Image 1 (cartoon, rainbow, N blue to C red):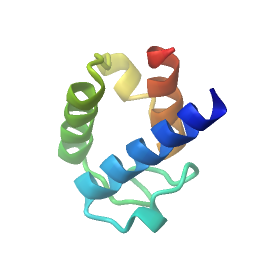
Image 2: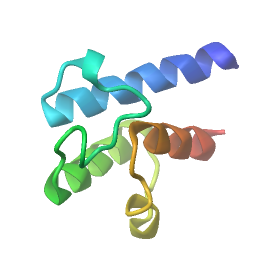
Image 3: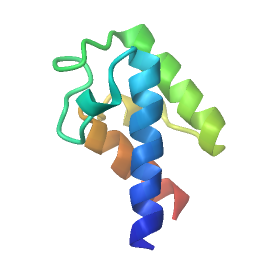
Image 4: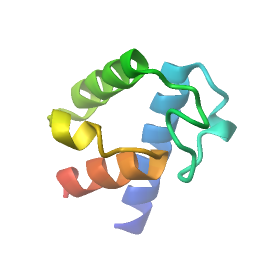
Length: 82
């Protein structure tokens, strides 16, 4: 199970890096989406739409605003997919 979560974390980080046009090495769990990676609101909406499509999930708007870091996104998606 741990390996599955590690793979999921790596996939999500890669998707975020691609969406925000950042090197994957910059996308770590403690990085803040807006402050550290300079994501604006449009970037975040597009990112969440892509993640919803990729993982066949729905991310509620009220949950989206709570996600401040890459780790928040990973934890949210991991929880939904269990």
